[in-house]
Amino acid sequence: MLSTNLLRTTRRRLVSSAFSQAKRASSSSSRQVTKLASEQEARTLLPIVTAATFVCGWGLLTSQENEDAKSAHCLVKKTNTKAREVEAKFAAYWPRNIMILFGPPGAGKGTHGPKIEELLGIPQLSTGDMLRAAVAAKTEVGLKAAAVMKAGGLVSDDIVIGIIRDRISEPDCKFGFILDGFPRTLVQAQALDKMLAEEGACVTKVVELQVPDEVLEERICGRWIHKTSGRSYHVKYAPPKSMKKDAKGNPIPESMKDDETGEALMQRPDDTASALVKRLMGYHSETVPILDHYRPNGVVAVVNANQGMDGVWGEVLQSLKRGGK
Image (cartoon, rainbow, N blue to C red; front, side, top):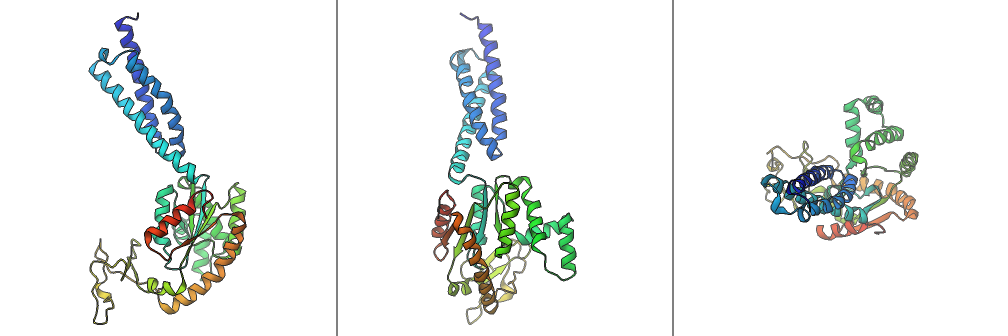
C-alpha cells in the first residue's frame, strides 16, 4: 500500500495537471472549432480528475488541493457542456456557411439577418459597409473604388469582388459569412462563384424572404432610421417613444427622435411609394435570374416573410439546416 506522502504527491500532480489543462480547454473554447477539440480534451481529463478523487481520496487532500480539484472538475464540466452545444450546432448547420440573403426592400433582412449572424456566429456583410471600410482603410481595391467614385462613376464588379475577397479573408469569416446586397445581377453571381471556387469554396445557402409587393408599401413608407447607429423604427410596428401624430394620424416629423440618443430620425430618400415601384421592378428583374442560377445546386430556400415575426424566424431556422428548403 502506498504511503500517505506518496499518495499526496501523486494527488497534487494529478489535480494540478487536470486544473491546468481544464483552464486551457475552457479558454480555447472561445473559438468554435477549438471548442470541439476541447470536448475531446475534456473527456481525457475526466478520468484524471476521477482518479485524483477516488484513488487518492478527498479526505487526504489539503484544503487548497481540495478546492483546486473541485475547480478543475467544474471547468471540465463547463467545457464539456459548451463543446456539446457547439457540436450540436455544427451538426445541424455545417459545413462552412457561405450564405446569400435576398429580399425586397422591407422584407425583413435587417431584422432576421442579425439573428442569423448571432445564431451561427458568422458576420453579415453589407456591400455598402465593405466598400466604405475599404475606402477608409485605403486598401488597394479601396483606393481604386475611391478614385472611381470621385470621378462620379460606378464601382465595377471586379472592384466589388476584390473588396469581398479581402473582407472574407479576415478571421471572423473563417466559419462563413452572410452576403447582403450582393450579388445583384447574374453576372455578379457568376463572378462570385469563380472567386469562391479559387479558394475551394462555394455558396452553400441562398435564402429569399418573400413578401407581396402590395404589402411592402406600408412597411417601407413607414420606416424611419437613426443615421449614425442604423437603428430602424416604423410608425406602425416599432414607433419611437417620442412620436406624435397630427390630426390626420400622420407622424409629426419633428417628433421623430431616437430612443437612445434623442437625436433626430430620418427617412431614406428612396423610402417613398414612387421610388418603391422602381426598386421593386429592379429587384424582381435582377433577383429571379440569380435564384434560377443557384436553384439547380439545391441551395435555394424560400421563406414566407408575410407573416408574424416568430413565424418568419421559424421558417428561416428550418431553411438553414442541412437539406432545409
